[in-house]
Image 1 (cartoon, rainbow, N blue to C red):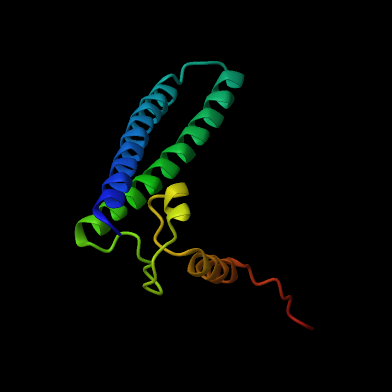
Image 2: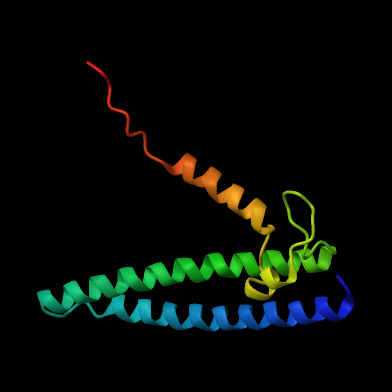
Length: 129
């Protein structure tokens, strides 16, 4: 990848990191606020529990995205950004444009996801009696 494109993607990744960091800070403040106002009536407490659960989910997503972004920045520094971690081929620019922190080319990503789907499937076979 040439320097100009690398600088473009670096800027894009840093901007995404800043956006997620701001969002994470905002959600943490919301979470703390929802957790501290426990003196409400039962209905209000129930709504607040749902709010906390929702905000907790957002925090988890933001944290995972931030980790992926930091990995992309690390790959930029190592000189391996834009290369698939599985097959070593270049990740197409349209994919990097859509998801700058992509680790894999589309084919390897599909294979990775199908392996995860298989490993996460519950054992639905019932014992035969």
